[in-house]
Amino acid sequence: EVHYNIEESFYFPFFMMGLAGVACFIGTGFSELTSKIKTSNYILFPCSIFEKYLVQFLIRFVICTLVFLVIFWIDTHLARLSALRLESIKEQRIEIVSFHYSILFQGFVSWIEKLSFVFAIFSYGTFLFAARLFFKKLAFVKSLIVTGALAYLFICSMVVFSHIFFPDTKGFDIQLHDYKIDDNFTNTEIYMFCIACFSWLFFLPIGYFKLKEKQV
Picture (cartoon, rainbow, N blue to C red):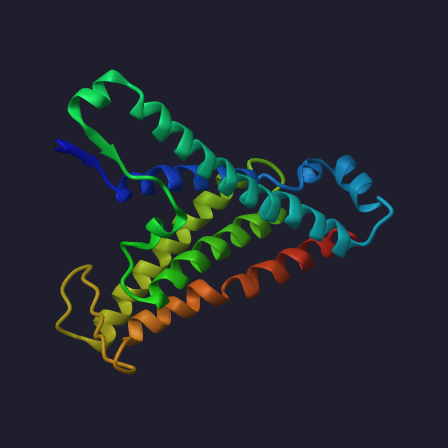
C-alpha cells in the first residue's frame, strides 16, 4: 500500500524556476552593447544587422530553451530514480510519478488555455530579448522593473475603465463582465489568448529595428 504519492503538480514550480533562469539568460543578450566602443566594434562586424539579430535569437532563445527542456527532463528522471533507492522512501512506500511534459498542462481545461500558456511564455521571452536593446547596463533588472510598471499601469487603467463604465464600482475593484463568444470560450479568454499569442509579433520586430537604429 502506498502511504504517500508525489503527484504531477510537484514538478510545475521547479519547471517555472528553471524557466526563470532561461529568462535571465535571454534578457542578458547582446553583451557587446554595454559601452560605446564595444557597440561600435559589434556594429562594424562584417555581417548584416539581421544576421546579428538572428544569431542572438537562435543562441539565447531557441538553443537555450531546447537545452533547458532536455536537461530538465533528464534531471527529473535521474532525481526520481535516485530518490526511489533511498531507504526512507522504500520504508514509507512513497510513489513518485514519472515526469513527462504533458503533465505540465493538466491544470488547464481547454486547448486554448494550454496554447495561451505556451505562447505567453514565448511572448514574454521575446519581450525580455527585445527590451535588452533599450538599456545599456542592468538591462535584465530594468526589463523586470518595466514589466512591473506595465502590469501596474494595466491594472490602474482597468480600475479607471471600471469606474467609467460601471459607476457602482468601489475603490480599486475591477468589473469584468464575461459573455460567451461560442459554446466554449468567453470574451475574456479570447482577449487573453490574443495578447499571449500575438505579442511576440510586436516585440521581435521592434527589437530588430532598435538594433538597426544603432547602426546609424
